[in-house]
Structure formats: C-alpha cells, structure tokens
Image (cartoon, rainbow, N blue to C red; front, side):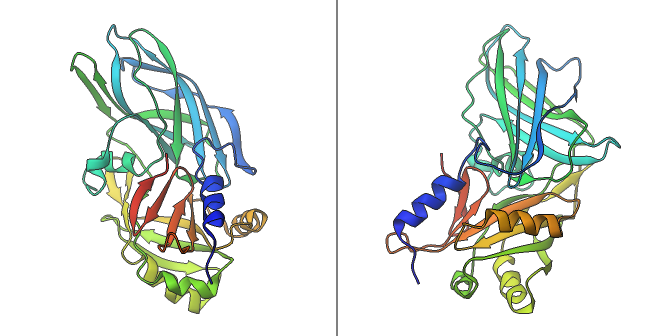
Length: 305
C-alpha cells in the first residue's frame, strides 16, 4: 500500500506548524506567568505567556535589550514550575545556527538544537522585541510561575554574556530517530498508540509499555532501540527520566481519538507526539514527524522551515 505525494504534502503542511495555531485542544490556554530572573541579566523579560496544546507547548514574552549594543544572537531557556515549585516544562527560544551541535549531547546547545525554533531577528540596543518560545512536548500540568534558567547573548561588538542556573532542569529532547524496520508499521496503519519509555543519562531509550499489546510492543521496542535523546537534566545534572509518546502510524485523521487516548493514559510527565508517515513513489523513505517544525528522515533531524 502506498500513499500519494499529495497525501504526504497535506500531512506535512498540517503538522509542521511552529505557531501552534493549528492546535484545537488546550491543556493550558494562554496564561500569563510571572517570571524570576537575576537583576544583573542584561535582557529583561516581561509579559510571559504559556500555552500547552494537545501536541506542543509554546509561548512568548517581551524582551528588552538594556545595553547600548545590538544583541546579534541569543539562547534563552525558561523553566516553568507549578505551585509547589516542581518542574513542569522548560521551553527554548533562540536565533543561533546550532547545526554543529546536533550530535554533541555533552553540550546544552544540543538540547536547543532539538527544540523548535522561530526566525528571530537581532535585538537593537535599548529596544523591546517579542520572542517566541517553544517545546516539542505538551504537558497536562499547568505552571504557576517561571524562572530564567539559561541565557546566552552575543553582541554586535563581539562581547558575550552567559548565565546558566546551577539548578537548571530540562526535559529530554529527541535528536536522532532511525527506524530499522519501518515496513513493519504497515500492519499497524491508522493506529495511534500511547507508549511509555525511559531515557537514561546517555540519551538511550528503553521501552516500558504501551496500550496496544505484545506484538506491537515487540516491533516498537526494536524501532526505538537506536534513538538518541539529549537526556533530561535536574538541578544541573543529567538524570534518567520517563516520557510518554503519542505515536500515530499512517492516517492522521485521528485528532479526537488521539485526545481521548491522552486523557485515558496521561500521566504527570510531558508528552512527545510523533507520526510515522508512509512513503510515496516520489519519496520512498518513511518520515517520522515530530510536533512542531521538524521531522526525521532516515533518522536525521530536518527542519521544515
């Protein structure tokens, strides 16, 4: 069975949206979040907004460059926490070319590389600008506050500012996703599964369980064996973590079914949404599409925009 090129184009256009506007079911819809930051940080953050939808999380804030020099490039990581100050999700915003860090899981820039990115421009001196934040994961838990956990700024005159909170916490991020036996997915076409995995401190996943059954579990365990994540960090150290995958094969006209499954099986940890899209005669490879603006082709992360 083959899907047409038109079908694949429709899938990619409908799925690879960075704005989150295509999301129809919201866990946390556009709430304004107070944010803590060091007074000495030369980038002032205000009006922070957080949204978690059925497949991704996103937000935005107003950033003020307090220096008399243009910020040419920046990395910003903001951790969102609940009323007990427990971690909910960390989101990223940046305008750097991080391609060279795609395989370097020893560097936090690799975590940023695996996140969604928007086309941000330099920030002029003493000016305000809107910066978009994003995460490839959704969370059913809504935050009450946030803190600036990482900021790296490069100025037009070559000067540099960097701050990393000693207790920085980030979620695991998928960096490489080869599929050793994608043809095995054909028998499961139009299936959506909820699967739990554990990601160790080296970024290697271990299958735990799914809602389908042993035959699918055996195949899925084989498919993810070679995947590489940037591992989670807690209080500045890499840690093992559990992650829920919402995994759809083939037909993507299942939004209500996917949401129903999430509500039935959801747990506290964030949810990573992936869709395995079958090949066409023009594009013989299976694509693994991650919620957001990128996808995996032959296991390699590609940006759609």
